Structures are given as structure tokens and as C-alpha cells.
Image (cartoon, rainbow, N blue to C red; front, top):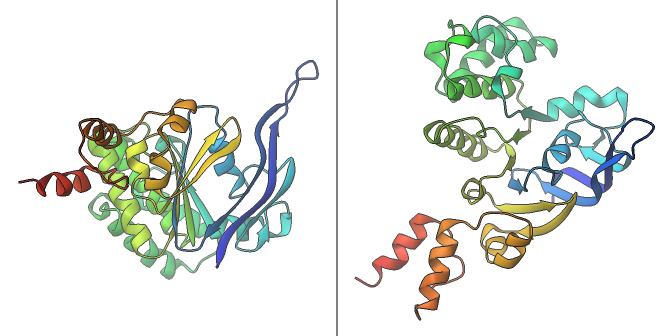
Length: 279
């Protein structure tokens, strides 16, 4: 197995004032992320999922344990840019990621900081904006764009640096349903192109798209498996205060009526296929 990220016994504590105990956000977490995979990490607020995400590209460093990204130890100052070039990150609020007055300048910002040749930057910026369907807005001011459009520009800025892995930290949390659908479609396309995707989300329906779902609860990994395996554990999901996906509830009610619904049906498309068998 070719792992792009390897975490060994990661513990992370937020430091507090002298008269307060430190806040332990992650406790003794170990996991590996396979190159080219799509992993969704789910949890309620305070579960540790966003803290975990920030440890994956060196924005935060372990209190204990070690995180390897592309083989580089995130604690090694000499390789911090290697880490961040390997694993790019898209945050929840696009306004916090946009730094320039023109869209194309914003997308160029990351590659410029990597010292890339200007002609290559031009090619990367144009391609990245086309990849997120924002090519016609490249001369626009970011503040004139919608929330979904700003998030697409933020994604383009990361894509232009050509990372092997992109960590999306709740990228749709501030968007309306249409905006969420657009961003998720782009994430799917990036994964299909071979980029390793790590999606931090609290939307259970978004995680269905992933190959693997990890449930975080109180700083630890509660569950780890395929979406079908994880979503079948209804009681564990409820214990983590997570919403049961609608199709999982529908399938459970059908089983109560004596209909033998397979456990793997967790999406609307699969449910429609199953129901159509009875026509």
C-alpha cells in the first residue's frame, strides 16, 4: 500500500492560560491515508476533525506522536514547504483564503511563493480556473463573487500548486445547497484526476461519495470503514450525535415492514434502483 499520509499516535493539545488545564483535542490517533484515495472524516463540533486536518499539512504540530506527509515529518522545519506542497488545504470560509484584488492574481499567489517560472504560473492559473469553471471570471474582483464562486477560486489557488493531496476542511459549510453541490462535483472531478482527497465534513450525505469514512468523537476515531459499513452502525452514529442519513432511515423502515433491503443501500440512486425491482 502506497500511503501519502501516515499518523502515529497523534495527540494534540491546545495550550491555555496557566490557571487552566490544556485542552486535549486529539488523543492517540493512528491512521494511514492511501495515495489516490477519497477519505471523509466526520464528526460533530469539538470532535477533533478540523484539528486533525490542520495537523495533516503542518498548520498544527503534534503535542505527541508524529505525522508523515509524503514521507516528510511535519515537525521538521526544513521540510515544511515540502509538506504543504504535497498536501494543500481548502478552508471553510473562502474570504479567509483570498488575498488579492483580482481572481487570477489570487490563484497565482501560491505558485509564486513556490518560486515557479512565470510562464508556468500563467499556464497553471488558466488551467486551475478552467478546472473549477471560473475561467471567465479571472479578471473579476473576488469580493464581487458569490460564496460558492469564492470557494471555487480558493480551490483553484490550491490546485495551481499541483499538490498530490488536497484537504478540504468543511468547504461547503457556509454555502447554500446549490453551492454545496457545485463544490462537491469539483471535488469528485479532482479525485477522478488522481488527487488524494480528504474531506472534513458534518454533512453525512457528502461523505457517501468517499471510499472510506472515519468518524471522530471526543478526539478519537470511533469508526473507520466504507460508507456502507459505517452507516450500518446506527447506534454508534447516534452515540456520536450524528444525523442518520435519510436513505439509511428509509431502508430501516422498509425492513420493519418485512422488505429485505440490502445493507449497502445508502444513497437515493441505489434506493431507486432497489425499489424499481418491484415494479
